[in-house]
Image 1 (cartoon, one colour):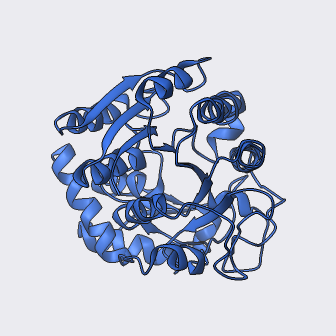
Image 2 (cartoon, rainbow, N blue to C red):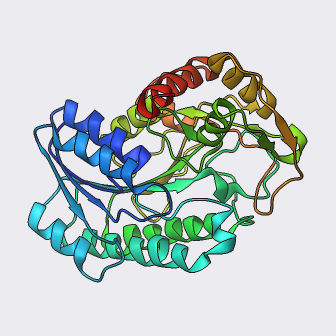
Length: 334
């Protein structure tokens, strides 16, 4: 399947890689990005510049929440598929600047939903996060588990977008898939994420902050594995048929939520060890308490995505970290 796809957040980490994947598969891609200064805008501009070298890509810069902007682009482009990735990300930053999460995540998603209502695509796909599982302690996290106790305002806004999208799917018959991403990492990654910060500090001879004294686990998901999952899910349009008792398919709408994770949590200190092996440098460590809004562990139940898409690659943490360090050294010439 290939056609026309509209991708929000196209200069972001995941958006950039998804655009690359779909362009290589023959899709025409229209990207929208607000180029917010939450992290280094030059990195975003470089991603867009690389995408512009490929045939079939066009980019627009503008804020998602601008009234009517997304609708105008969608009505002009008439995409077969919409993939909404743009958001204000970050658990800790949502404590400092909650308003930006209302604007980008709630109002921005509303603008996307309105555009899809006016010009319905064959499939609408929207990014959520594993953070919506919040205080849940039953693991691995399954899509059919209740997720009612979010621990950060970021997670609360993303859970709200799931509910918003469900209502539009029910009211207007929009086939909709929500993704819950689990700690995505890899080349061209976000500077606010642990891997980027750790590598930068270690190469500079600076200490890294280890939260909860290292007693944390994350289901690290390599970027190439994740975008392959997204690409395959494009064709898995929700209908009336469930794939099993683990399917999150709504009983009243063509809507489901799908985990995209590696399905294998990694201890934080093992993650640090992988970085030390890739850089050849032992990290100086500051052991810190748990930060507000954080959870001690994440772990994706991957049964649903594999039932919908078939088996997906699962890059090991040492291989994935090695690839990131090689990219980082090359990009920053260190």
